[in-house]
Image (cartoon, rainbow, N blue to C red; front, side, top):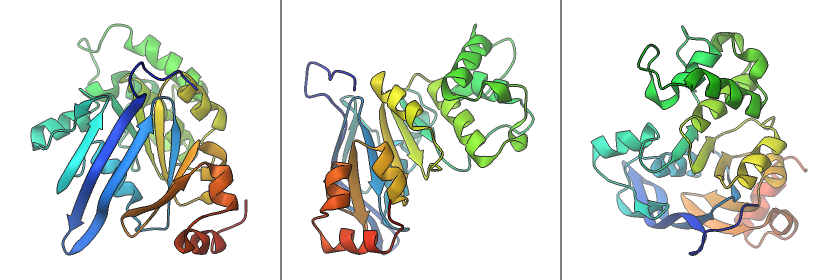
Length: 250
């Protein structure tokens, strides 16, 4: 794991984060820290608030109250500023969310090369194509460079989306419902380079194998959090025990 910065080593901090959708509170007083170079799995049943938490961190969801900071920079509440964050500008947040939002009429290489810039032509940054090839190689998708997105499987599209997110030089990568086939050597390699990863999943086996820490959510709350060996062996809460009892054994 990468060495923490000279300060606390915390990259992402949430304090008292609340979010309502109509009468339903989908995020309930969330406090969470994410260290530099840490891989955290946010685990829980469907509707527990995992995806909303990811979208709040990247600015796609406006929170009702609380504070979110990334690398010491507070997430803005104005719509225009939140749009810049969703595009990966300013605070270094990369996202791998479904639907992946590829341009169907551009090749995989072009989709990665344009990255957050969303254009292709003379104005594309110099070296973008060369960097895109290197990123596709990094994630194990170099063989798909000349293909179009619709020619790829869901797992292959996920790798390409990861390469595209890396094109923005993020400090944090958010994965919403990653497939269990996301290579562990890739996530570990990214973390070793100092990136923080937040994986929102309902797959306990994937969380157990991929994460340094498991954050269990239910009903919009963080119920408990601990290293995988502890969480899957001696969960502290009845909700966590019930969830694990209803899911496949790892």
